[in-house]
Length: 117
Image 1 (cartoon, rainbow, N blue to C red):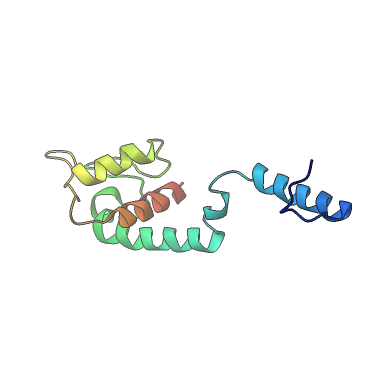
Image 2: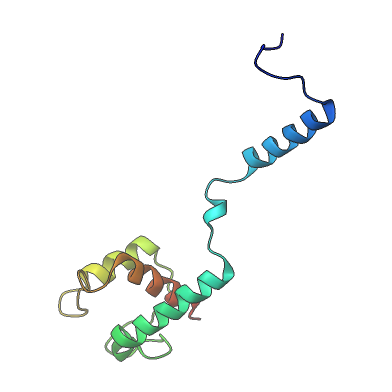
């Protein structure tokens, strides 16, 4: 039973429309917002600049750590754990950057840390 408001569609067009709708339905949510390689590279570059300014002195230029600070290259901690450490610091060991670094800065720093091997 057809609705009166819907025009009769050509069967070829109906098939094409069904294929398009299926493709959209199967596309993972958020896939369209996944970072493009160039935007990921920009994020890493921004993170490197922040690392040099805020972290390098203690954690070394290559992120391999020093006698006073741990290695960050190849870090396995979750993004949430790293974010918490950056924001809150560790008393007597690492300064807190809450209020000094924005969420976007921390995201860039994490992207850079993930790029270190």
